[in-house]
Length: 227
Length: 325
Image (tube, rainbow over all chains, first blue to last red; front, side, top):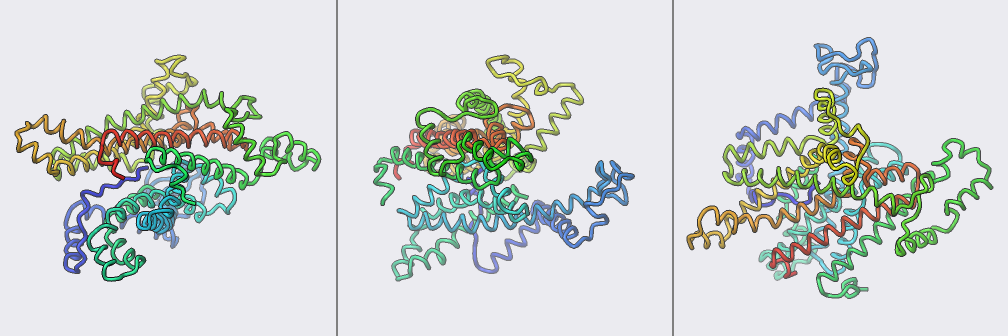
């Protein structure tokens, strides 16, 4: 697990529409971009197949007569020791992982970024309070947190997402706080203050949008770790 | 109340103050979480039979385990013990948590250090290789390998490598019962090899990325151009001017990773049967041994905080620019 993300080679995001569409086209033209899109599509299609019950077999149905088969036309990935279809199990596992990853990273990024931005922007007591909370969560073994949540709440994917989200909040808070420290002194932020914008609107209109590239990197990295 | 004034203005004393606040927070969180989880030491040690105990029996057992006192009293009893050097006693094994930790901690530290070592040995040269020709084949293939290493879950890699070696070469040192470094250095290092490599593989990719990014960023700095203009030759420029500065973020990165490994190598410890600190927490959790879990978590958190503090101090020494804030 890391909290630093590679900031230096993230291209600066241009906001005008033509530059944005050019970037999309460039992404689709490069072999790596195409490979990424294809992989992503495979994963999403697999997960959707499981969600809508379109896999050829039921992932939970046992059929001991067909146990431990190799890949074949009817069982694309073969079967396990109970004769369950591995392809169906992979697909439904994918759907679960994807759902947990999306929900937990979404929750963690919103809460964590908000905490980090407020800490970095307002500083003082807010910064210290957020600092203590992130330090405590960082130093705390995640396993204990997960066990406690699993034992007290119902065992479901929501519980799993929640415990993962809590573990990820301090990472997002830290990643978001750093750039805010520099951005709050940027000339356009000072200019916004000078023309009488409130601190809140400066924060959301000028500081947050300029952190997009860093946050996008962190969000995608976290998604890949969790799914 | 201003927290800043409580710890003084100097950054180092403020850091130490923050560390203490963090540890108190961790201890309270652990204490509360343990009591929120259903079941206690009575139910854990008697299993289903706990339901057949009479209320009087339950009450005397709770008194025996110290669970009948108010929560605040329980917390401060435990905290008072910790502050006077008594981390509590495991009621199932009758060992003090201090002696359990004394046995488990060296194994965890050894494993974490070896894991970081492997990670640095793979990550730093990899980062140098990638940064030597940015955007070219050498760069992209190195990054591809690092992406693959990042994508493999460590528990999968661990079990796959261990079972392959055992089946094909008949080599599985971890099956022989664990030996510490002091008992049997030869066997111990064999037993640590696989887990260290597994941990190292998961540490290497972030180290590699950090090294690569730092080198590329520093190569574009003004002082590098100045040095080149002065006539500093290739190798000297790379080592003295670029590498030395590029390693600063790598130090921070490794410190953070070391902190995580010291408390979080539980899965690898479990797979390779290494009696470390992570397994001590798990064991305590299963038995609902509150004192064992609370004290061990505090030890883990203390190490994490200490490593971060040290990284910070080292950072201050290596990079004077940080001292500004």
